[in-house]
Length: 468
Image 1 (cartoon, helix red, strand yellow):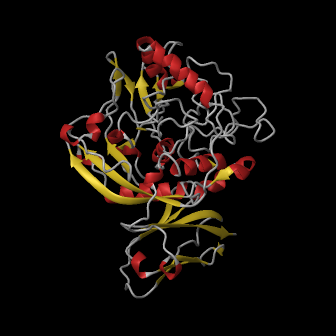
Image 2 (cartoon, helix red, strand yellow):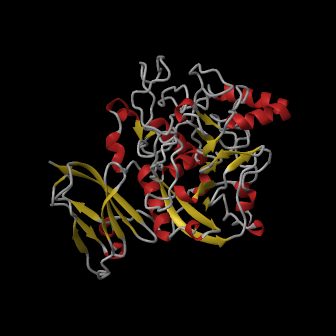
Image 3 (cartoon, one colour):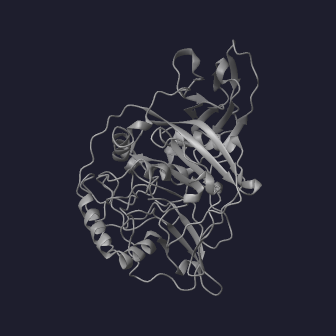
């Protein structure tokens, strides 16, 4: 299932019999804008799997009934306990481009990998924005992503999803059709980056898809046969505008305001969450075709029930399900800070402990072949690691010591909102001599920051607390 955002102009919207379809197609998120004369706020944001389910229900009723039975059963299956050992996944990024702006620079891809490593190791500076009530539930998946290769393919092909088709951008994943063939999907996470064409149906443009991914097949918290149709299609697809926090390509806000979405690279965080077995925190319930009874579960105990997804915002007052939460022993608000919601990317900042355990159990089970000894590890021991001191530090006193192999790296100081507040380009020091760098923190407000050093092969991140 996936975070596919569709920014559309529809005059007539979907009927209530558009239920959910999660069997072989990822979830799409619709952001429905008004056409002339209509107000945007009068139209809902919908989950596009409803449209797919409508097709399946009418064309394959037996399949649909089997899917519903499996979905209901999956809500009550326990998630296996996880081995919480840190793991590394090697990533192959396929940049399949037609126009020059789609051929993203290495620095943008490196920034995306760095963001994933922060999010999946709870090293993101905006962890400080998590509400106190949820801090005890915050988890650390302890997954490191290592960039193994960037494959660049210039193409004349267009990549668009068909609501009536049986595959999802198969031509993107097939070299002979203008795409790029997957590197061994059992050994690598394949991440395809391209321009995804707007989704159309019956001559109407429904909107823009930003990404999708497949979970492992037949997990207990998913309906049966939710995985990739073939091994060669397994992986993650992202629109080129969603990659990295330093991407100059903008995405229009679906609320009709005329502004642009805040991009923090968390479409990738969300989609890889699906790839590693996580569902949306509202359990894909509470949308058209399903009763909004707050009983649909994602199979994770410490993500509170929600009636539906967030609307690209950060409404921390939202409580769409007034019910006792067994895990918490009380009614809880919606967990809008979770990466598996549809909140704004600068609102997302955490996985729960249950989600982290589930990711680790998937990496010890159906995706265990991904976990290997890295040829170029992102974490090294002893004196070879950068060192940050003192920490905590008062303004103007923070220092970063770089060993030789890190001295070609770009150094970023990142605020709790995900913005880079200081960047230091490579100084080109001697490989035998450590280099000491003073971080310019004199004019920064007290609080949490992240210090990141990234080279072509490695990323290192550590949190820094600035004292008043």
